[in-house]
Length: 273
Image (cartoon, helix red, strand yellow):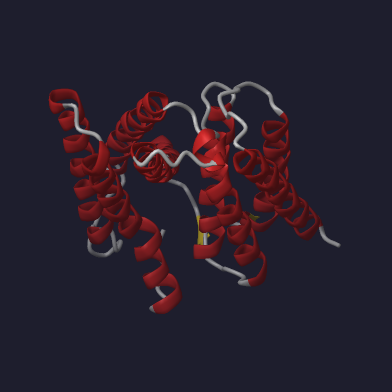
């Protein structure tokens, strides 16, 4: 068994084990307010290390990085899980992993069984490297915020109807959930802003580089999240309005990179990074 396969299979097992631990706690209604180095966090960190090894084996090749669609998707899954697990050391957000970790395991399977071949050389210096890092971190935070706002909406509806199931009782208080949501959105907005600024350094021909759709959709997403944060600060927006704007901004950002990359590489068979 190669190192790539061994590390990938082990990472999948640990992600699923962490998911099972969290799901069991939520079904029982055990409070999830605890932070720090808990058992699920330890398993999550181990999964991240093994996932990172599999990414290194599958992406680092002679001549650059293999950033084909499914490799990039797995890298994105790893980044989202990393932000979640590290954040859980300081804030009660790990229950989001019930939705996120299974998705990450799927990205690993896709990376294993659908080989990709798109060699990319990040030779543009610090701007392109910073742009890639900031983009992945921003998308990860907005992905977590999208799940957080859905959980927050379900929690709010359950409390209004006085149907606090074990799942709802396992979540932090409503005020804490809401505060965490807007913390994610604010940090994601800052990172997205920096990503757009650094990306401007290496754009030579927007049309030739297939960047027009990515740029426009990213700017739309930036505008949506900016309006939401301003509405929160100025008018105290929350509830269904926060749900709609968060999901709208996240969908626009998803169309900007993952969906466009999938269409160009997988469907149209064109190189794009």
